[in-house]
Image 1 (cartoon, helix red, strand yellow):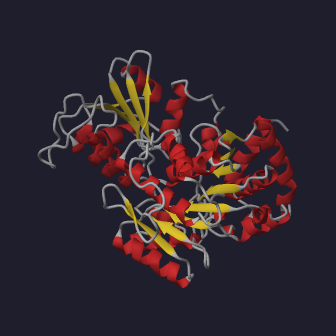
Image 2 (tube, helix red, strand yellow; image 1 turned 30 degrees about the vertical axis):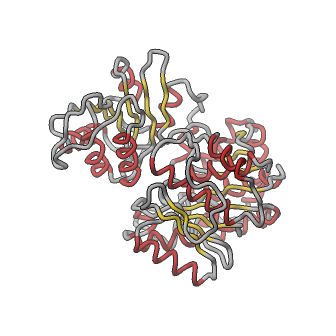
Length: 462
């Protein structure tokens, strides 16, 4: 087997769709020798900010001298991004080896209960991290939490970034229902932390924490700078250099700091190490600013839901990047022509609330090119253009055939924002030569239900 064949095998697992439930993952982990029992974890769930918070925690603990595993999803370009040790992507050879080792373990499973792509990759990651002797694994959920395949571990801490609307077809149509699924990562007696600010969601998390006898730390996101409640003030709260722009990243950083503080008895980290870890954190595709040789600035942000779009809008209005920012319109119902406003390239998945995202972002744009996302779930570019025009009638909204065509049309624009989907951001990183081509590995991010009928959130996992 070579790497291409291993990737094709992983593609074949998409046949089994996506489902909630831990039975398959636990059984597969047992067949693999229960690698999770040889590892320590920080488990991170939430609607937005999971990846950024994971990256901050990974950077802090890696700078402290620990050997760090990092498991995240989706990948932007290469499947190998999902499994990293000390921020080195798993090698192609190790992917091939792990696929070969796990294939025989799948034979006992009947076709109607075959492990899914995400379940298999979860066990591959656990095996790899155990083999690599990781001191700590930063472990991001796939979808939800309670019945997500990652939830077979017992972590040192359970972290919930925030609760907002996304994946409602799987997780529920209220913040309370979504919070219940995310709070499912809270384990008996294990410290829990959250930056959730929606009162109804926070109440659910507090209830689950009480039931699990898990001490809960809350980060108050409505303060500036964000404040950490219920813990000593031993760690830096202000004047921390953070290379990731946006006020929402300050909240993510506060949550990461709170987690480090709670775990000081098990994993002590000095303040100067924490500062260095935060100052050197890297997380592509989230307000990532690129300056091309021509001086053109391109901001890549994977805002794919309403909360993410609002965070992008706030960052642009605050001046990210400082050379070209948008001011809020005087009349919220009317778009304002903003001098120096960016040209947007926007693409979204059809199952996202793209009309609402258009209403948030279109008033900030000088012009918008809408594009299809390289996904079978893409929204049509002409429908996105119509939604942007409806949100901002003076706006010129052009439906392009693809991202390459849109980038070429914008080659003389001083400031471009590429947003609406992490899939689109990944494609942009490839086209801009900022990431090696992946031979189509972005398609591994695709997942769907085994059947077209609605599935209860008690039945789905990645």
